[in-house]
Image 1 (tube, rainbow, N blue to C red):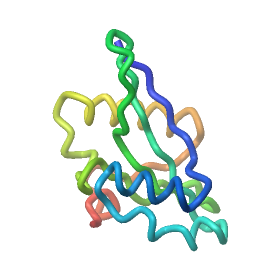
Image 2: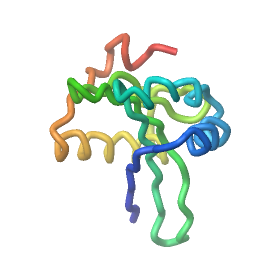
Image 3: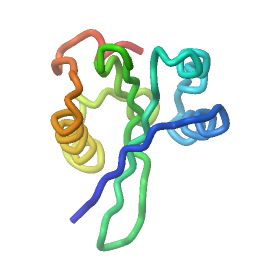
Length: 116
């Protein structure tokens, strides 16, 4: 059993922490977040049996269009590469979140989902 949270990253320190934890360059998006064009979101999954919470995905949202431009896992992995485990759990939660919030998510083979 698992539960997931998706929270907006609101400051540079938290962006840097996300990038360090996930081993990618999300901290370079600070200016885009400050000017309101984009927002960055962090997904964590808690496994209820162990009470351990882990970061799973970082999400880039284009605010004006409510379009998810990019989703990255640890080391810039693609969510569409998920086969089982935390990555698959994250993908499932992401799809539920996008439907609930009325967001657009690129298709599995979209260049936006593969862009590094």
